[in-house]
Length: 157
Image 1: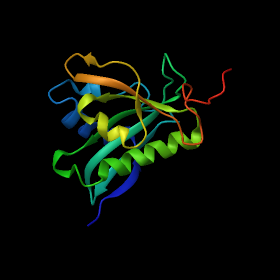
Image 2: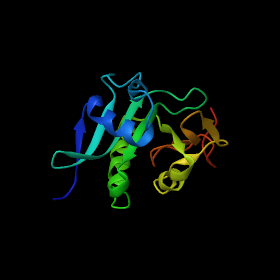
Image 3: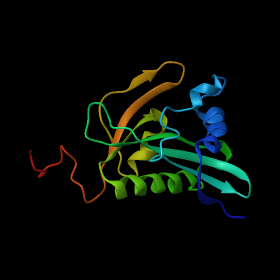
């Protein structure tokens, strides 16, 4: 049976967030402040009833940049990695942000920075540590028809 991308609520994402992104940490760390915002979108990759991967996009402007949407909680089961499930999740999240406009940002673990870069996300700044979670970088993305603010030829306002 093939895996499929489906819309879910935030509650459906939390078990994988906990298992993969915050193992051994308190469950409340997997409840994000904007989980229930009506503009938030949560996706899951499912095979039958099994949730194999999750990802969410929120209306959360980057404090020091122009991006208006934020990816959080991207996670795919270890045994399902390398099968394209993360790519499907990320493409879905990018489609939402691209359709709504305003660019997108995330805190990416350094070990998955190359994954995000394959889809056009660009590192913005130095590595930093999220205590108890690990090394991260900020990555940003603009829809292809939107010039990056620092791109050559972009208009200055």
